[in-house]
View 1 (tube, chains in turn brown, yellow):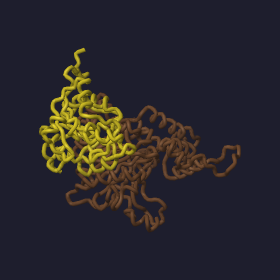
View 2 (cartoon, chains in turn purple, orange):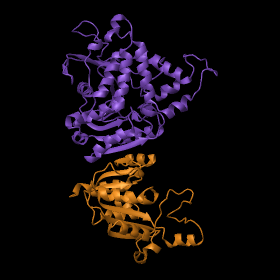
View 3 (spheres, one colour):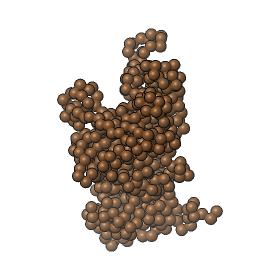
View 4 (tube, chains in turn brown, cyan):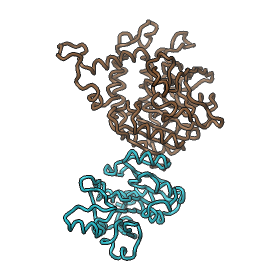
Length: 376
Length: 212
């Protein structure tokens, strides 16, 4: 981190871990007897405990949302541009909590963890957890942190789905739900992309039915491919073109299949660094959780009926060039909310960066968050 | 924000709105109209805006605002879902005013429309001089104006007639936002702003109440 970055950031942060012994019955019917939740907090909880914000992470995120672990870190947490002193999620005002989701690979119990029943790591035996299960585990974390009511629960993409689920499952514990670049359920096309990603991982010869850690290897080819597919779909055609165009590393074609275009080089670099920090079983699990998310399912597929039970105020945000979680999907949420006369504000932010926009410091977007959180 | 601090045209409209009603404000600007109605008349509802700066202002006024392009329609709202649908000086800037009025009448039990009157004598005078009108109320030149569907009081009356819309009442304001008697007699010549209260066409049958 350089001095400039340090000034604007929350600074050095430390992850914490809490153990939970109370068994957690999952949607799948499987019970997780005990588990750890790894999380970070920024800012200070006020005396009345009314200033807590829960940040829910997306598919490839974790609990390290802001700040640095070490002065030598090249990059801060994944949402550092949004969380910190004076930033939209202002840590001078709010107490921010960001947990790593169960089944993740950042420190909370997941496929890489030791399975007490088998004596080896869970690997593919780790049960598939759903968005509802995550909300339940986060609620228990809130209990331990003595946070009865969240001032806001917020997140983008899969994180936005968790915010929505929170408002449904714990209406009295959420004052504001900030649902960004999300959808009430995945589209067929989204499930299709997830399936292609999973196939890429599972077809890797190093996958070993998900027990690759026992062979001291990772299915890196498959995971890289999955990441590349994901990454391209999280950006937009226009955004990719603006950034890379048809630029080549060298002027002339080499008539082979090695890296020649800038975009190829970029994708390979992204994939390479992803494999270093992410677990293939977690990727499978998270994409499945996305596929399963459908809170209206138990209410006759009636989203209006499902959201009628909420009492939070909503801020729903979408991005114009996001084609994986298109604005029309956010509008489905908004329509259900307005149909049941809930408090909701909706904005479609102009952006050429596709689904990934929710992670970027787009001025209109951050001004909006700043204004909204400033009124809480 | 209090009603008395609103602009004159909004004060008039606010006086028509019943306590505790649900209001949809199309082109709600910074949301001050809805904020005042909420404070003094316990009104609920939403503002519709397209401009990001206004969205931010609405949020700061704690007004529920939905960023929607009116030209893309109001199909997300159910029939009769609001007691009032209000559109202040916005109709002249949308692509399909003819269709939007139908939509407003569909989702609102009562519709209130205000618009700048192109029939005002100052506009006519400038037309006579062979120019597109630029007045205090229509300050933009022809090449920079967002107003693409200007009309006169007579034009609007004709539209209501054509659509068989029930005009509940109407009133008119001058440059200083006063209601002068003469203006009520010769509105198309003397009024700068027209305010119409509309009800659904007498012969209308909304789809959910149709006996077909």
